[in-house]
Image 1 (spheres, rainbow, N blue to C red):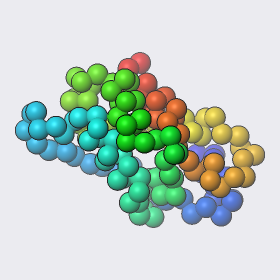
Image 2: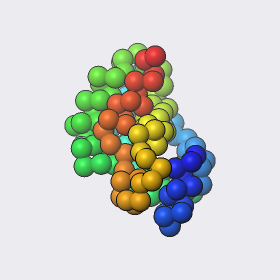
Image 3: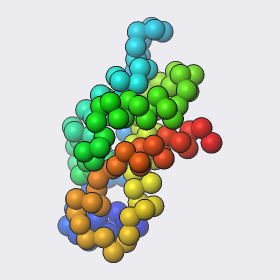
Image 4: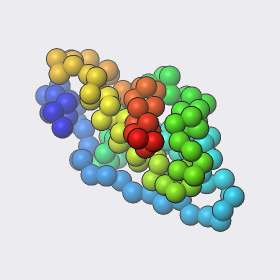
Amino acid sequence: MLLDERRRALGINIGIPRPSHMAFLGNPGTGKTMCQGTSMIVHIKMNSQGEDTLFFVFKLHESCTLQAIASVIERETTEKKRKEMNGGLLDTLLVNAREYLDLWLSFECVDTEEICKIRLGDSEAGLRVLSE
């Protein structure tokens, strides 16, 4: 990715571009696909990253509260889609959000905070792809 090169040029040690995988197992109706639970897992995943993860150095913008992310997931996905994707929804949300971040950022951006901060709008756009 072009902006990853920019991040490296700014001295930001971004992680290796390798997708992470998760599986959430459990009986139907145990709440594994609930929006609030999913938003908590997004926060946990974004706050406990190793250097070998796809989202190393990336942070969620302050607007990405648990309630805000849960609302986006509920609004932008159907219950059927959440059940179909199970844990795959998280990676799709974050990967697509990062791609949308790169779409609106200017290549001239030198703000190391701005260039690595995923906003709520990026998450919305990332999930909107699922319904297209």
